[in-house]
Every structure is written in structure tokens, then in C-alpha cells.
Length: 332
Image 1 (cartoon, rainbow, N blue to C red):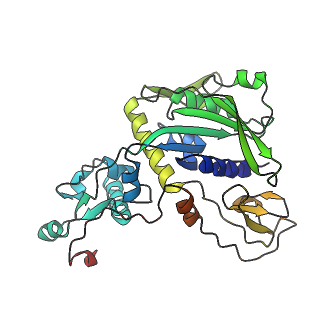
Image 2: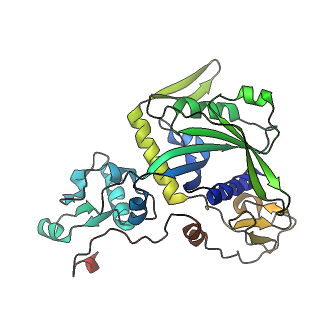
Image 3: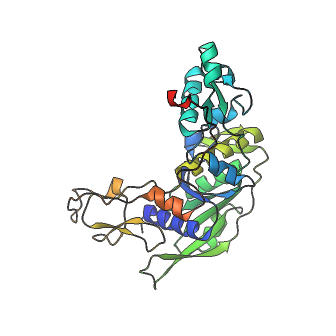
């Protein structure tokens, strides 16, 4: 099956049987954030998870979290950031939009400047983070070994797992870093062939996330450029990764505008199933007039955000923590 379908069905399986957050296709680098993309990320709730849920359903900008804007006295936004003014302005506007910052209208009016404060202290809301690399067919491994060695040497996530449908041999296991866990996924034929069961072939070894890491960068004949990564830099990157996972989730796909595609919930979540191809498909790359089975139609309306709200502890419209300033909020 395609890696896209495999990824969606595994996300549905993990969401159904876990109590954490599941997201996909997130940057897993530090020195080069986009240099490594993690297929699936699972984030376990921390002690203050409910406080995070109450603030906003969106990703909170990292610059806003790191700023000197606090929950007490309001501050002039420009004085609260140690970064480029454009980035500071963007972070302030986004934090206001999603409800992490609020304006102090009295202070702003008195000084003719915009004063802001946090609506709540940023909580300690996440715990263990697991990165999962999907490779349904080990006969076409691509850069699998290099990707997993990067994950282990950097140790940005607490555990790394390889998920596959292939039969896993001793030779496969020997080629993988010992710290990488290995799952083989099996299909339950009683459920239209799409119910996944996970066989744990090797448990992952916890990685040293609190220690310095090494991030491989560009490879050249006979040498590889690397970047040492400090524990502090890793901690900031872990927070960004957790925040991105919280705001994004894994339902980031569309439904094709074709009569052959229908919403299918056999996996426990609603996925774009193509009856012509007899499988889940990626609307962006696999569906269109070039397909022999394509017949134009209005795309099926599926409220994936409502489904996530219903099936997980994430809330689409939390109550928020913004304080109301009587008579002034209507001015924005």
C-alpha cells in the first residue's frame, strides 16, 4: 500500500488506542529544522495538559512563548522580544489572534502604544514524545538507515520507532540503530482488510533528550557535516515540536472532487477512500483528470476538526483565559 495510506491508518490506530496527541509530517531537526521530517509524532500529556487545552486550539508561536510578556503587568510589545521586529510583530499579532496574548486597553490608550500580557502562564503540558518512521515496504528503504541514525544521534524525541508491513528479518534489525523500536503492522481480514494490529518486534530504547546531541547535515563523498546541539536548543525544539503537533494534528488531508471517492471510517477515523483504486488516496497527488477512474464531482464535505474534537482531548473551541475589560473589548 502507499506510504500515505499507511500513515493515515496508523495515525487512526494510535489515536484510537492512546490518550496523547498524534500528528504527522513535522520538522524533526534543530540546526536545520526542515532537514528531517518525522512521519508521525505522538505526544504524551504532561501534568498541566488541561491548562494548555483551555488556552487555544492553535499552535502558540515560539517567539511569543519566549518573550518577556508575562501574566502580570502589561508590557509594550516591542520591548518584550529579543528578535527581529518583524518576527516580534508577527508573533504578537498571532498570539493576540489565538488568545494567548490580550491587549491592555488602558495602558495602550495612556501611552498611545500597544501593551499586551499573557492570558495565562505557559503550562508544563507535554511529556514523552515519540517519533515514528513509516516504511510499509522494506524492499524500498530509501534513506531509512540515515534518517533513523539522525534521529538517534540527535535525540530530539524520547523514542524512535520504525513501522512496517514487511516481514522483518535479522538482517533488517542489524542494519538499524539498536535504539530504534520496530513494529510490524498486520491487517485484520474481518474488518474489510483495514483494521491494523501492531506486533512489537523490538522495544525502543529511551534516548538522552536532556544531553547534547549531534545533528548530521550535508553529506559529501567521504565526510558528513554535523552540528553539535546543546540541551537548551533541544529543549526549545521539543517545545516547538509539541506545540506544532498540538495545533496541527494529523488530519491535514483533503477529499478528492471525484465520484469514486467516499469517506471511509473502517479504520476508526474518516479517510478518503477511492473505490476505483480500492484504497485510501492522497487527493493532492493521486486524484485528477489523468486517472482513468476520475469523474468530476463536488468534494465530500467532512468536518475533520469536529472529528478530532470528538475523538481526542484536544478542543476545537476552548473556553480561553482572556479577561474581559468591560466596555473596551469591542475596540479590538
